[in-house]
Picture 1 (cartoon, helix red, strand yellow):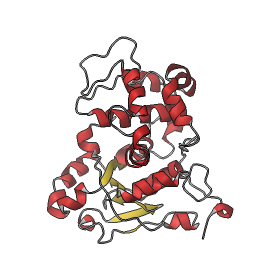
Picture 2 (cartoon, one colour):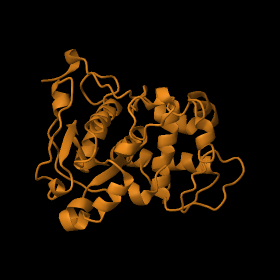
Picture 3 (cartoon, helix red, strand yellow):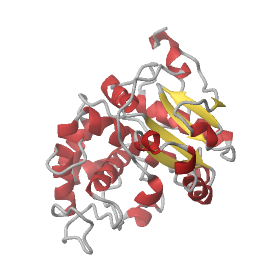
Length: 292
């Protein structure tokens, strides 16, 4: 739901990363100082944690508990059955190849300040050669659902997994361009194919995202998020429907199944191994299923 200017999603290719400590069987994540790769990142981000070879970079001001929570959420999206291995290796490999990463700031204001320094600290080819999503500590709320507070890590990290992972691993199915299976489903949900956000949507549309800075690819990213998070019951708590209904009407698993069967079919197809349980920020892999 964030303006695409501040969410920053970029794509490219890269060498494969090594498996992270969590993939080697450790029960918890460990923060470490940001190294000198990618070049220049240690000038802006002081700490990082790696999840199956996918890094989360954070500024000094970002609270440690928020960084570690984001790592656990990412791990649970990728290894939803907690056997210590990614549920869909093809997706994880695409994220590594495209240099997928999360960058964390404590506040939106800090992010705006840091982004002013990006091109002075990080070579343009490095930054533009990565697939990045941004997350703020102030919107990351471990255990927020129990308090009726939405935890934005569920959204932003899922954007990375789908846009940098599924879209690249299955370009004809989940590619973020007109004519793919997910795009055709989205066009039906919006009541037509709109390259740019229309000022008004046709009657009967159930996906009516209205941020005019969000291009067609961005609209696909948001559509998958709304569908999957609703299927995982992340949008089904008191007051939530009133908050989101101007953008999305199908906020429960039953509503998605009945109201958007094409989307439900794609996101529940076992071939793609999408998560079936909502992360709770407590990734505990079963050691018996972990490779050395």
